[in-house]
Image (spheres, rainbow, N blue to C red):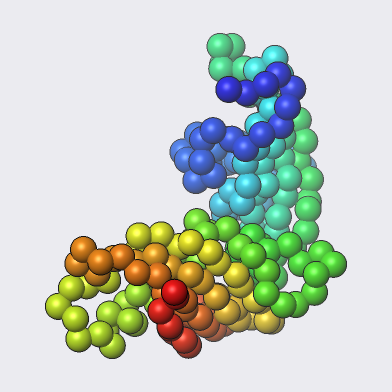
Length: 200
């Protein structure tokens, strides 16, 4: 239950149609007002605040002249009046070619090194699925490994590549086990399983 005035994560997920539509509206309105051409890419983060209606605080990735940039937007919605207004839209930073923001890593003040990352991040999920596929190919078991969940994930970003250190909960037949894996992602976006060991 949302408290009046407090900002909290949106109940709709980042990639929901509703949030996407709000973000597209914000980009379109900004384009009209500023006479620029930004192309919506994706919603990075979505928060909302209950006011007279709902104020959506969106972190949006958009493309300007071929360069990915991050913007922060505020969209005020009063659904009962069919009212939607862009309150604020500001540039929040450029996105490097391989971005740590994809991994939810904040580099401010930390510098390089391993950082904890959200286990549901698409990059983490891709790395986990790749690890499982690689383990499967090396295994001579009749039962395929099934990914139950990513228990923990850390990532290290170096220039245009990344390393993921993850603890995976997997199932093989009726047996559950935990595996510690390290997966490398190169600048072309290809994954490679570097290390795998059972976690006890």
